Length: 185
Image 1 (spheres, rainbow, N blue to C red):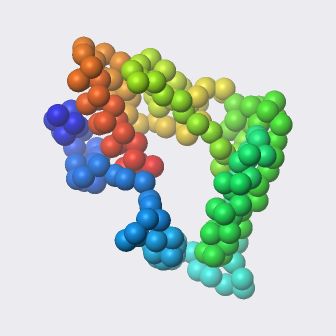
Image 2 (spheres, helix red, strand yellow):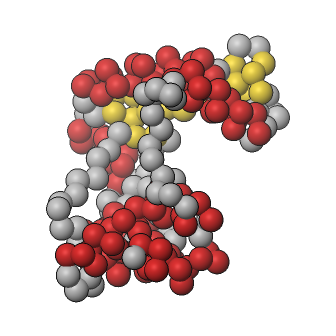
């Protein structure tokens, strides 16, 4: 049923959408953190990043660095191991703590490179998906579309989800949307 919903968009989507649904990376056996880091290194090398002078650098010699914006010290326990693992690749992660008001202002104005946020969902997703994923909300300051998603297929799937006539159709629409969001990162 998901694939039937996605078929009209086949030309606009990655073939991966029509394969098995994507799963988040795992460090559980048989995968491992080391293997994930090897894969990341290969992807970075393929994108032109090389390890030089103690850092991952692009063709211009610029070091790969990124700032993570957080609003609560509780996220430091998550950021610290992430930072250590990025260091293994030669990437410098700086954690920037902002009080809730400054954090919200920076989020509203898209003044961040990476940020901690959650997208709360209910058992029956609906109209709120317009704010999270629809193109109409992407450029609006203060919208919940912090990812800046502008994708006509996502727009159509969100509209389909909202108009689902029954629970089964809603679940199918959610799963189809999830496949596309995963494939598009």
